[in-house]
Length: 479
Image 1: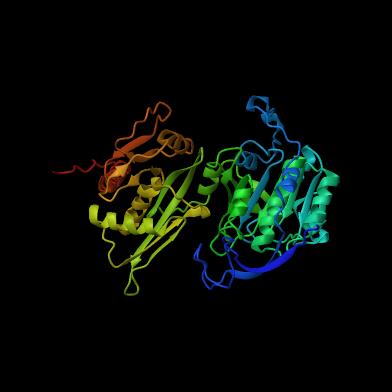
Image 2: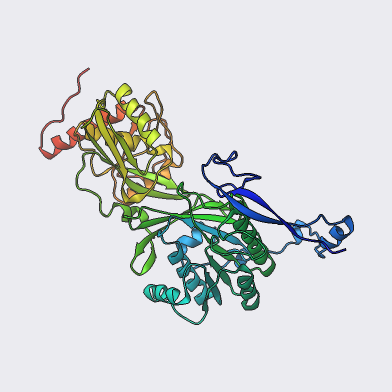
């Protein structure tokens, strides 16, 4: 007796994939509004136990873990060192990698350069675009200086045709740009819908594992910055990379949000130029190249991104509020963190901030999430509020508590070594930090227990420097 395929209508949330038999204004799972769209889902009668047993009999054999052969040499080690580092040492054969980012941030440019690098070193690469024609891809490649007969391009949206091409060519690498534009005819919903994205990603995962061809997917993001489509997409893939940066800035940061074959703490830094993405091999120096000559309100912090120390400048501007309610504005740090630091400065250090606007910016478009930047941010705000220069040779590291105490930070010595390498001679560090300091000769460490101590020490050291420059005796503190 032949089985008959039927279809039914469901409403699926475009953000989380939750399904409902009727349209809902607000998703009961993720809470987003107006995300339900109508989809047709094909269903088949349940198989009998006998047919199910035949369908799962694929001849696969269980192996002892020690029998599995894999060498690190099997990875495709790229000529793009920053990308190599983020992936954990290269591309793993048969892996499925998702690359997300805002529109125009450089995802397609980076992957086209990656395709060229792999094609030049390892073998043919298939670049599939569902958004551009082959002529448009050619124009982009010419602008990037990319050519050769080993980089194959295909303009196609039908996933069945794409799979057929990959199976025939057996490229070293396949790139799909993007997962939201491809579709399967067997799924009766529009490209980019929850059902299409889920089924297409599952099909590509099976393709990658069966052929051992690594597949890179470009993923669009929604207005919240998350990859559009069902959350299951990020569960299916082996690696999730995010390319981020400010549009008006040239620097781009590639972060690993998930990596089954390496660390998620690494990042790669690139600079967007007319000729494409260029690696930034010394990002600390690059971020400080255009450093402002204005010392008031500017303090340098040494962030730790994965295993890489990164020097960034925190800039602050404190002005009298033009309107009734003072403004608090940030770029590159969390706004709630600024509210807390402003309260701590006013309550614990006596810095007058009531009725004043506070603006904080991380130069270079870098986003800081670690609390180790608290002390540098607080000193930058205090410096501008009191109109006292912090000094161009100063770095600050430390987390602030609500009592104003300066707490220790991870891998302090590694951060200080990077600052010392770039010529910084003074560092504000938590009082309880243990530093061997053998390689920090010539760097003065100001150990501070509270943010108030740090502000007083900063003012005292500035007066000593001025006194030395004028050949005057240093001021003597009383009490």
